[in-house]
Image (tube, rainbow, N blue to C red; front, side, top):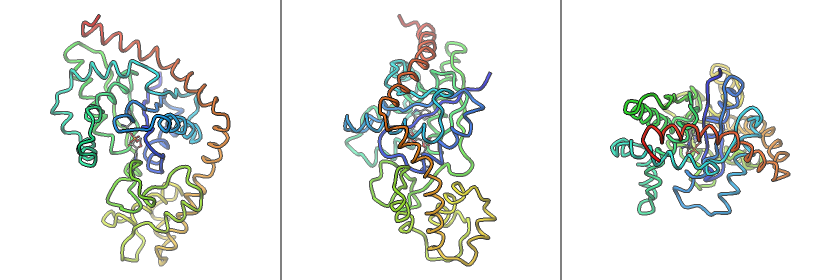
Length: 327
Ligand code: TYM
């Protein structure tokens, strides 16, 4: 029996190379060796205000991008979170087993609530309970995510353990899987901050569907430093981030990359980086255009995915309700 992978992305903005390098690329690499479920987590997206039409469009765009990146919907289940009621229902039950103190420690909530101030919803605070429900409904073994989601996966594991200790073996304990390189791609305009889809500054992120000239110009404007040498040095976040992106798109070793850029300047690095990113994204962009030419194709994949995932989710939820004494 293959181990189960579960992961997801919020349809709350344009997908960028951070999502690709930190998450989707791993999913594709792991796909053959695992039994996979990939979700588009629209209930998480509404923890901050969304335009209804745009939300639906992003849900379909992200599905198209999963497939264009190499997720095979025959092999892997791809579905929309709100299509399966069990997610919201289990989230409520888990809420009742998560101490407030655990939630108050979540760094993502602290960061986001500082930015949003009085617009912060209760849903945003409760976000990790819904994420735990997503993961625990499917007997998930591993959750491939970027570094920013590690704490949430650990909370899912902690609540599973707590529930099991009260009611007996019910949930499998999931493990986060974080890539060694690329787990935290930083903003091009400010390499001390994570590349984030909620950032709107034009030079912040390279989006997966950006045209080649846009990709090149964003990279040419990326923040570096006043030094010259091109080396993988974590103390120089701008150059380090560009080199990590180069490493992941080119597939070359750090030694080869440093030797290649020896004696060259930042302009050369940015230009060559533009070439590898444009070429790296070209096949994905071409496949995306073909896959989405007929919008009903994406909808039928999502309907099929929900039909395959629903019985699994309902089985877990029924067991949980039985254990707790509901009904
Ligand atoms: P989201 O939509 O913020 O991000 C989706 C995935 O992309 C990774 N990621 C990054 N990796 C590297 N560098 C970056 N700059 C970067 N930005 C984003 C994230 O770590 C994530 O893996 N809460 C999740 C969605 C979710 C989920 C789940 C994930 C809901 N339920 C269950 C796994 C399992 C989120 O908001 O991801």
